[in-house]
Length: 400
Image (tube, rainbow, N blue to C red; front, side):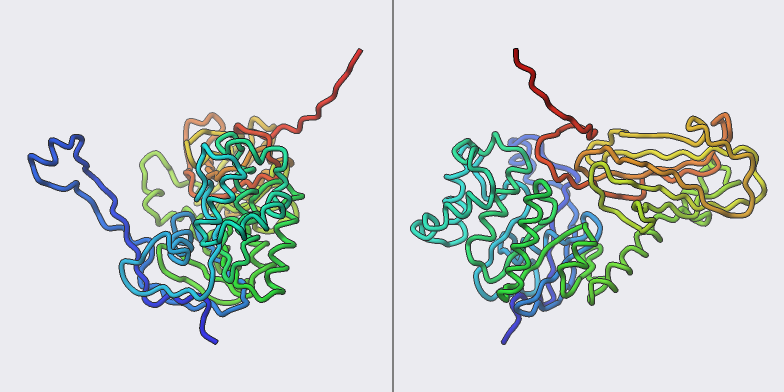
């Protein structure tokens, strides 16, 4: 039996324009194209996915993971090499793919099914099961432009898993909806595995990758860095994330004039409530930021600071330091670690970047600064809240 999915020397490039013509008239008169560079999303990638296996793709944002899924789904086509897929493919990719915002949820089920090559009669037979699985019975006849992001994902996942695919592709499958719906996703994936379906999914949730995958590919800068067992590959990836978080004294940043380097940040790590490295959290989780430092000589009364910035728009969501928290450090020397425990991570779903700084007591001297170089994600399992912070809310009704 041949491979369910096969990549042979696949290249995928995109154009990044540095200069575009503002007006059509300018383009016609000058007869020039905009200035652009070729960006390789994937470069000479080769791998096979055997039938009836579950393969996870991991790696940092922009590594090429989602591009690989779109090539398998035939949404994109390679610039070089060949992608072969055996059987019917069902894909749940980024939010809203294949949905028309002005159509109702019910109408979008038929639209999505048609895009997947299903006859209308077959979609009609499966309609009730799709709606029931999504849990959106009350909203199924509302336009999907009124849906929350979680509702979009619930409907998209319900369609994807109810069209009897041979190959299921899902981007961040385990980030959909609330805990109850996530459990339904777990159960359906396990059922697909038992039925011998092939599953390829992208996830930042490394625990889920270890739990579900038979094999894991780590993709970085458009190339495969590692290919093997989930435990082995995720451990290598975590080690690399920590290594990238080093702000070495030999690096370019350490040479900036406003950093004295008397104390240097050697590493910044994120740990879960059990003290294990973790880079995907949920609202309300416990998180520890641990800073490893080295001193050139003893330093009196240093102040350690951290900040959390939302990745998409640069909003500073939280910042604190040891001084304002009442944690006095008389002196440090040699090397050591300083940790700050956030007992409840009250942030909503998004990507975030961690900063850290070591300064003197008056914040007039910066010894070292780790500027937004460590990434983590908050995954939301409830549908309603929007904004920046998560605040548990309990409603009550009192009637006369």
